[in-house]
Amino acid sequence: MTNSLERPKWLCFGVLTCLILISNYTLYRTTLFDPVPDEAAVGSLLDFLVVVPLLAYFLILRKRYSLKYLGAVILAGYAAAYFIIPARHFPQFPFLPYLIVLSEMLFIGLELFIAYKILTKLPGLLREYRRLNEINSLFLFNAKSSADKHLPNHKAGSVFVTEFAMVNYALFSWKKKTLI
Image 1: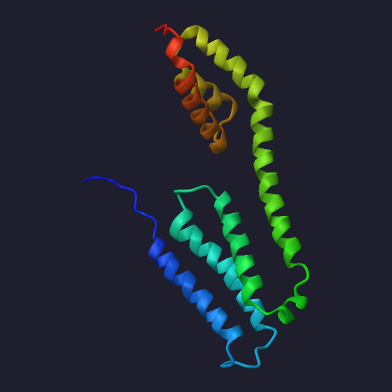
Image 2: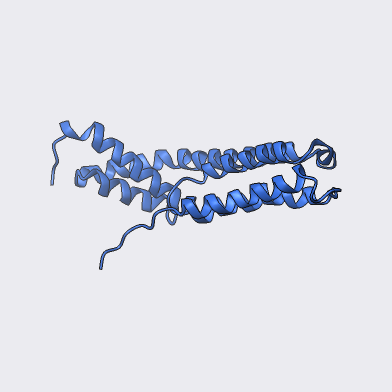
């Protein structure tokens, strides 16, 4: 039995997103449903700012791509809402652009916090790595052991160590002698 990653469900995501876009466009740009109540804009905003990003996460982004792309999907949903929903419905939501910017700032703040936590642990990691490097010269083993000691149960730390090991092996390992 072979295990393989399932391809993203782009077609399903595209069809569902097009249905959301077409239904909202039909609601606001045709005369079939006139007069459109102001409360319909709340539903449309939920479609564009919550439902479409959730579809993108569950059908495309999950376990494949970075969550940073979710911010781009939310911004694209806001742009679609801005172009589809008439301007007379937006005065009841003056906080919406600020909410979008605030959510992006919170996400960037979270990334900076993770970088800060790793940088504050870096001197201890380096000391432990140098101590282990005197015993054996296997870079990945030493780096993972020091990360396990100073960053226990820290997923971002293990990702950082793996990325750093990849850069080390790609650029610097060709001229080092291994001591086993």
